[in-house]
Length: 614
Image: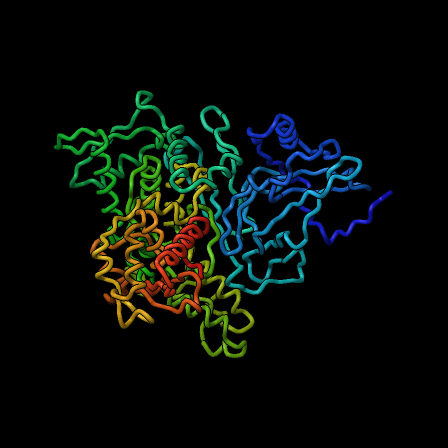
């Protein structure tokens, strides 16, 4: 007798989905056998009774049913085989048909798998609870050409909350090349993949996707230790051949680049020893730290021309690539940025701090994370606001802007240069009908195309050293903390350079809630202070001049750290306005409640990406 099946209660995921069940060694032998059988292939549940399946909270697999419930077979990828990253609706999971990570758009985090009661035939019935199943939609970044839920008729307009792109790296050189060639392009986020396994030394599989997924769930400190251990496994032992680098301190940049750019990527994992010619110091760690510090200061010095401080971001300490830097280099093309990438990768590999904070979407590019419209705000807040207004205008009003599909950029040698956003862009007027495409092209230009050559070389250099799979376990904030180190905080300086507004304006630092706030912050660990600062200002770094120099813009204006008192009835948790370095602090009834809410906020920030949460 066949059971009537209401397919609206189920979600079917492609049958080629890979298995990914982990074996819990704390289980009894029967459970462990069951888990191993699930790993090995498709499983018929009719022979298993009550084996603790309730602990599988989510799936990414295929459910196929026969004529009766007890004939169901399943391939299940447990939540342990799924990254817990979920930011702006994007989550990373295993690609169907192969063990590659991919990004999918998930409208809900509540994915549930419910084992039903065992029937009298002692077989297990599985049903997805309809109200718990996530709605998964493929979202392409190509405006006007994407389909939702497979329906080509549902063309996407530019939705600044949905459209996202991920960089794709294609290497065209060989492992024997000293400087392997490659390309980097932007593709729709749902098309981007990353290998989820790592092979080292003779093709041995060093890490599987389950290893990476488990590492990703660790607390930051444990995750950092895991990363360091994996780098140590890749490191070539000292007596198997090390690299001796001799440089003149006065010519540290030129000498260092000549030495390091003569190495093959395979030599990036060797131990480097440094000597400053004419100096007596032996490199037992201190000389190497000195070298990394000085080379970083040279490379990231705005006066050198490769990088510049962000004019419109929430913190002047955040750096971005100087679009004119390509004009400054002669002979060696963009070799400086390949050098920068190798230095950043080697510093990370060797656990050296490079305290030069980059704008957020650069870390996203390194991680292979989706970049979105909101990332423009930390690059150019005026452009962010302008593009948002274009999307909000009435259709017939757009043409009155009198613009076309071009941008004008400053150059060193040719004055202002007009760049077409697409072929023939100078002859295409902006209208209400094509504004979605215009905003999409402008977003891609700002976040990648504008400095495509430099960013390509930087990423190729970075991955000359670091296997891409290893950094998949981090989020943007964690990677920045790992590369730049934790900031040191002078609490007296922080408090002296804080402004008060809202319900805290009259009493300022003497208000009871302000007193509680500073007592709580002072009790925080350095990591929590860094996370709080990042939440409020957009970066975990403090300018060299202290909090008094926070967020000087291109006109020298300062934007101080600000506490804005708000009513407890209006806000439950603190919120922030990163562009103004403003923390909206509810006036809690007591210090314990404030501490609880701040710690809860910190926990949320550790599990989510960034500090733009409201």
